[in-house]
Length: 405
Ligand SMILES: Cc1ncc(COP(=O)(O)O)c(C=O)c1O
Image (cartoon, rainbow, N blue to C red; front, side, top):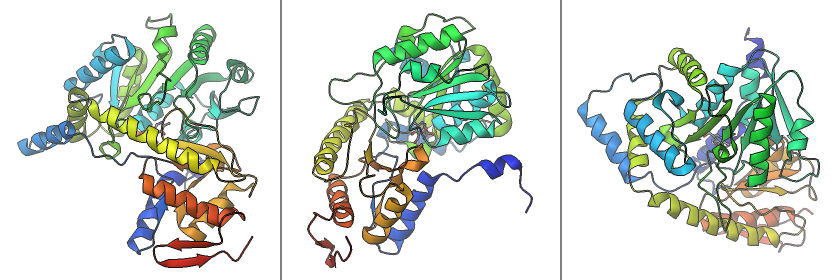
């Protein structure tokens, strides 16, 4: 079969494939525990649902302006003012099919073939593939000290004449790391000085725990002119638990946003009007759902941390945001695909192998589900991996006895 060179280089999305796998196993009646998910389980805000259904009831379901309806842009402008203390105009805003599409078209709008995009590793699975889709080159960078906290020097060491952009994601998927204000300040200033685009993927910015606070990139920017190369990406998927609506957005210079809008106009004609109305409902409605979700996630994080700490051989770094642990299982097995596969086969627990985020030997474990799933999931994992765990395990009323070490 003749398919394009570019499509041959693009891998499938393992994280989305895992969701499908979990659904299929559940349908077969398997007692699956999905610790691989990337979406909160809370219900979408009532304001979002009402706004969407009100619009559906008009039965006037039409195309919208490619860059988003004015009402949603207005709500995003207010959101940006409230959360980032930054006033932008509708021409600085584009609404897209999730933060994912916003990042994709931002890259398409700025990259030429062979240019390079740097991002810290471990990284969100889609960054390398998105960059490749633009015929450009992904450059993942590990922190020199092996931590989940990159330094600007680590990034600077990879900058060359092909470098066009840096992507920063904090709180981070997959590590849950929240980068310091010092790092964000340094990277904003570094990119300004070197005239490099900086894409801030802030999709988890309100899901932060303890005394950590979201860091606002605009606080450290000095160039607010049309030359600014700072692009901020956000959306309703995670904080409002609205993944299925597929609404995200980007804020940037008018030139970049216009280029992105032109691309989107030809790709999709813009996002569904129903979803845009729902996002207006979420942004303009009661915001208590975000705090409720944040508190639930912080509690889940603490529960998972306790369980992982009692898991001999597993090394963890406490996450301060998002809803993932990126835990080191290399003491059991260095090949993360193998561990992940073993956990599905032996105990029906779904995890995401670290290799897809650029670090083998690790597993990404989500705590966006229930406390019951977290507790039972880690207990099953211990049984499967840790020779010191009790050799009997009950899954429902099925008793398993470990017969391997
Ligand atoms: C770091 C990161 N950026 C962007 C996205 C995309 O979010 P959306 O559902 O808005 O496309 C995700 C989703 O998992 C993510 O983890």
